[in-house]
Amino acid sequence: MLINFSNHPSDKWTDDQKNCAIALYGEVKDLPFPVVPTGAGKTEIITMADNLIDRIIAMKAEIQEEEAFAVMAQGEFTLTYAVVNRLRKLGITALSAVTERISTEEVVNGEVRKTAIFRFAGFREYA
Image 1 (cartoon, one colour):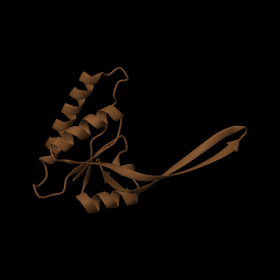
Image 2 (cartoon, rainbow, N blue to C red; image 1 turned 60 degrees about the horizontal axis):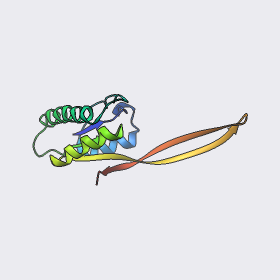
Image 3 (cartoon, helix red, strand yellow; image 1 turned 90 degrees about the vertical axis):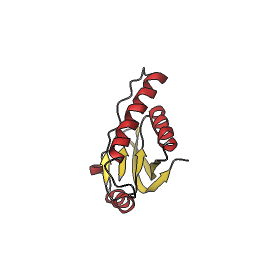
Image 4 (tube, rainbow, N blue to C red; image 1 turned 135 degrees about the vertical axis):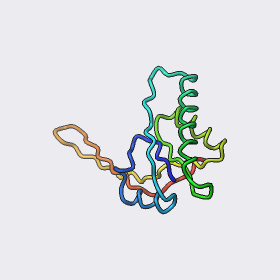
């Protein structure tokens, strides 16, 4: 199982990303990344991370011991960092999606408009 812990629901992923996730992990389950209040301090981030780890462990308990399991964690940086560190201490693989950014710029009526396309290129384990 791959837990998609991000603000990007897996039903909106490209076919390439979905197919890669299914080939590697069998299924994808979404765990929406929460809104992190701008005024949140270290204590709030720690509490949020601990609560999320509890949810991830509960999701992991749903699968067989020998099944592949990982968490793709992408979102607000401080909470992502806290969750990834906890996952690694538990021996749970933490991943990020790798994308190639293709951007173009054009000037329309004196304004620069930038368009970016993100092409999925795989998953990378947090180092």
